Length: 407
Image 1 (tube, rainbow, N blue to C red):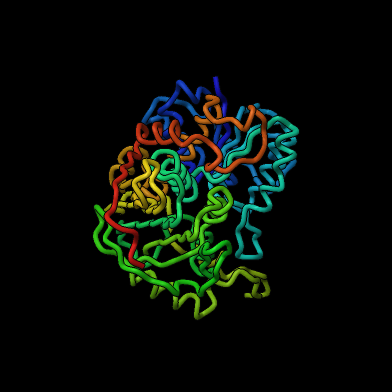
Image 2 (tube, rainbow, N blue to C red):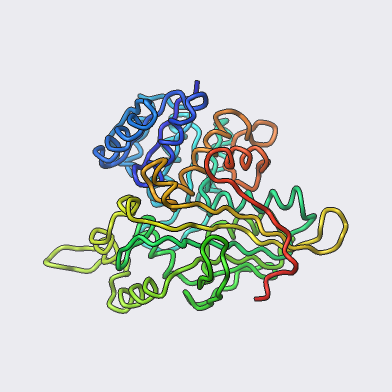
């Protein structure tokens, strides 16, 4: 029996809970909490209708460590799956330590007042989790998450070393809106407007946001413009694959998205510092989030596919010289919606969250010598994770390319 508490009732939380309910042999008792309990109740109703499984729901402010600790203590889960905002990671980790509970998230911590995300804050918790005999698994989404596991699978099965690594994230879906983000607007826009960083020759190199663009032909989608960005898995991959000469992250955006974002940025709507409006202090980006479409509402109208994967070049395991491999998943928005009521961007994060949770509660992933601590996806055997991922709706393929990326 494994009892889990999921915190967060957005699209990713919805997918994760639906998929947990579809695996009752692993997740025998599922609890869902969020600041807005009505969102939890709507997800629970959908899960009940689709699977017949009952989900218990709760209201919780995850910023409140004492209240979160109390709820965890009352429920007594084996694992807390944090699918709330990344601002809340440390508070939820504190609550897990206070209650002796294992922890999992999909995105690393960032402070509310600075658009900067890095693993250092959470890595600093390692000794406390280890001493408590608890495990914290960081970044069990798709990117970060599956993209890191893809790299380690290539390192295990195809390449002795990885010299060059490019992560390519393409959303070829069309939601029919003039402007909307496919996951939390506040997090999305902070991420996109931050300076780009990539790993090269032992250090991170910073370039202007959206300053480097390339066109790429994505299977199932077609040719798309992709922009180099910074994404947190570059930090952990640089740590666990020290032989890499260069690692980059690319994400596709349509021209209309770029035009809208440019205007919003120019008029100050993407600011994260407070301004005074009608005598009250507001954060422009938080106000913008309130007027944009809720990402979880885009499922019924979104059509098309996502295509996310790694292209890695390095010395072949079989001694045949340098080779390049492309490992990826293609996910259909309409198929994802039919199964869980959510579009593919939520699906491609929520399914890996469920699979990561399964790795922990079944004991397939454990720390060195079974010890606790704070771990990234790269530190575990990729095989059981990717085997289950393919069985749970995100099949993946790997192919050898004739040459490295030309750019």
